[in-house]
Image 1 (tube, rainbow, N blue to C red):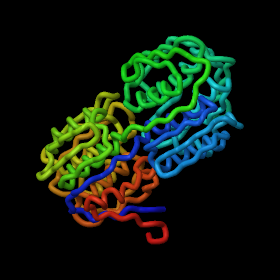
Image 2 (cartoon, rainbow, N blue to C red):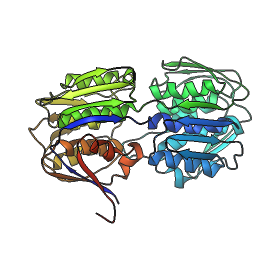
Image 3 (cartoon, helix red, strand yellow):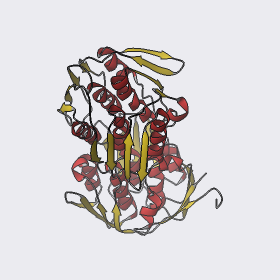
Length: 420
């Protein structure tokens, strides 16, 4: 099992190219099931979750060609309408094949999903919405089994804001008969990116980016080409690394217009930030200031950046209060940060972080994707060597992270199973 070995203390300086957004690419890959024509995607990150999704689609009969960061997909000869547990168990986004399969083929059999153990993420809102559109859905032997002759447009209000729920229902609605209105829809940029692709394919979607999305169903969709948006979470992670370790970097291929809450908080922490349309320059030449925040749905501060900004706060001047409002079990990195000398107290959904002058290197274990990134940030800021174990979590969502950090001066290397 691979590990990362980090020797802290180096300031970061140089340029990093931000990869395409994992959370946009995954539903976009699943959207290929909606047409028999070819979909061509650019700026697709090379990640474990992308590979898992392509294997899942391939098992269904979708043909794909993956070269560098370009993927071509053809679902002209879908041979299976089942997403088996073996492929779904590691990645919750696999549920996103449910809507496309059901609306195009009239049935689907999708295993209940897995993914990071950061809290309950039920699919009941997906089921509620599809049933409102006329689907007959049962849970059998760990599978969601859905059938419908043709979905009908409906007015759907989810009980909570759900990103994958919004994506699944939006994809199901594009081939439904009549108009579907999604109320209380998620507003994330990744949802707008999916809607942009679907509209290029001939869908009729309006209102994406807001909390009310209107979809007028069409009889069929056609092929299209699309470039996946930049990963705002990866960009934010590198900015937190600069905040903790110090230095100055430029992020290329970034999308600062999607990062308002992240950039605001990092500026509060003391980073000097300058943005263009597709780049961000940041510098940090002092100890960061403690910066409290609450996670919330977009456009609020994203839960996917909570662990990284917490790592920055561990070496900040002052005390920060952090409230995690999205997932109830997303503080598993706290114990590992404590092994490095961080001072963090947890009370339910609230974490109180008192900054220390410096962390000390230690052997730590990644517990989920974003926790992995927080431990890397802490290692960059710490004195001595830090070994981050179980980095297969990191590989799910960060493309060549150690190479990108090494290119800007970090002392970081991957230890393969043989070398370790």
